[in-house]
Image (cartoon, rainbow, N blue to C red; front, side):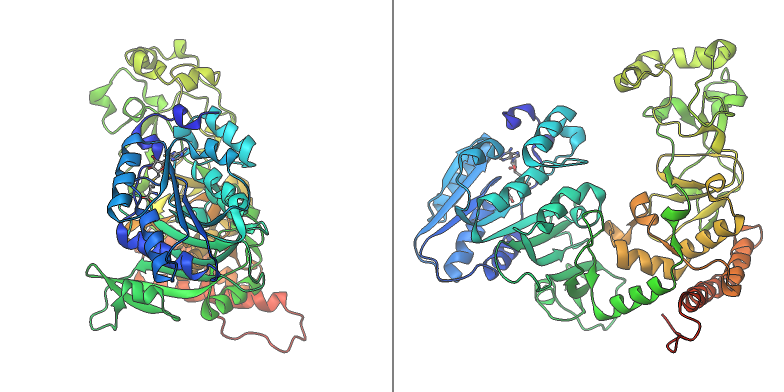
Length: 565
Ligand SMILES: C[S@@+](CC[C@H](N)C(=O)[O-])C[C@H]1O[C@@H](n2cnc3c(N)ncnc32)[C@H](O)[C@@H]1O
């Protein structure tokens, strides 16, 4: 299988090179975990690009006292990169075997247990760019499941190639720590043969120029199995004047929480250990005494989680927004029948508790609104819409997957459940700095950059308000950060199904939960969203979890909590 030949353009190669300071950091951490006393040292970068990681590893080897017996081996499918790597490595006075070719093919002829150190920033190429066929081949050969990224086979191969005391130094997207799409990588580290020793979530430090946020994972094949991995995270925080700060790399090596100053910005550095994950689906979490105590207390007060109560759905995806979405249909396409134009909630329309009063955007939604299943309308009965869609036929037919999926060429790609729009629903944007969970009672459709939970699925109206309250509260926000913690640049958080379904709920039967419900009703209804009401709600949510923890305790329990948080 020539995987490289199947992937042609630059984007598909996942070419984001490692800057020197990050390469040196990775190499130093990897060497720190390599057992001394070898006479020979084989170092491999399976996707070496311009050779930065091999050079950094060779320098770290020299610092660690290795003067000779070092073999550097690199692979890359990019001819220019290979030429640059060879020249740079020679300039640095080093020898290396750099092969132009697909590592995933070459690795087949490499003996198992033959490499001391694999240092790599493998390509990140998602299934949508790899193509389904390549993804399927990779999954079969390397034992991968779910969403396959080109990063995954590179990690899967490492365990086989490394000697029994070998080390892997991996630079990858920090998404592998928490998202479902990172499950293949997490699985590789949960198998016995590869144990995580150190983990750095470098968050929005911008140490890496690509749009991905980087993480460094150092793993070894030998060593104690019961020693938890060191876990350090770095995320920008609002600057505090006069704060005591340290340079970023010093702070990353520290033994306690601190503030780093990097490129004029302040970063919160958390230092702890990796909570041993229960399974490959659970996001990796940083354990530190305060966070652990807080999470344990919260768990004692948790009755159910959002995912137990209802399905969380993403909004519609038209894959032709210019045709289906518009703010000014009367002028732009007066022929389209009004009945098929439904108000649309998009990210900007959502504030905590409420959606905007006037939804400007409307979606042309040609489906039977009485049917839960997607049932496209007969366009013959909607001549204006038919004429409008026909005027965009070429573009719409260009979406071959729609036709291959057995749909009409003029359909929306993901129309969701037509009959559910009319029911009240909780809606929230997929990306937002702070939680913005709102109640929609207008019957609007929800756009694909938001998620929604239908009241039809929840059955009990009080629970809807309890969910809204927890999600919008400061307790909910802290839970998100402790348990999911996947932030993007500028402190923006991703509120995806996988995280939101883990949100906790207190026992709804207590008086404290009932108070939360009543406050949430006020906040979601008309009138002012006052600061006082919001802070009352924050306190009420905490009280509800405390009360819920008491309900969960035995009635004669002696340690009933009075302050949890
Ligand atoms: C993220 S870059 C990293 C390059 C370099 N190791 C660094 O850290 O700067 C990934 C590299 O993988 C190469 N690549 C992509 N697919 C490959 C494959 N199947 N085998 C070997 N190299 C591959 C790309 O050409 C690119 O140079």
